[in-house]
Length: 123
Image (tube, rainbow, N blue to C red; front, side, top):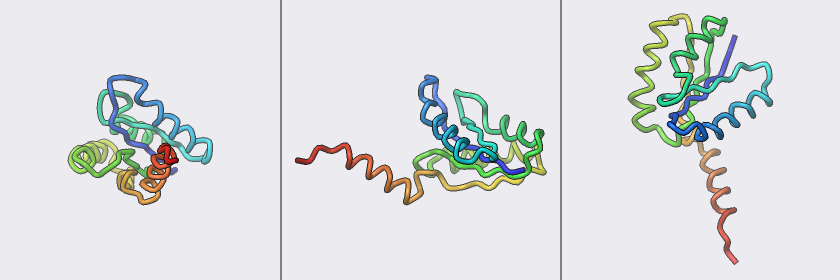
């Protein structure tokens, strides 16, 4: 069974998670047969290893992991590999396909540019 995990930073204020929850829910609506979960690096739950291992216990064999970060910074380059190793230790049978940070996608950058330009008031 395949699944998708959206991996976000996390924050102390629970309202911070709202856009990521909307993203998760939108994907679930568009792909109802795909298990889609949201995981966090810190401050919020579930943590990435926690949800990945739970998914493996539920029969998930392949996970696509998408960091919903704007860039490939320290959390993605340094922290995430450590978390992936922790997952591998607990669920070695789980295949995880790590994708680039969402902000590295040209289509995402283009959508953000369109949004920003739409907010300018050029007369």
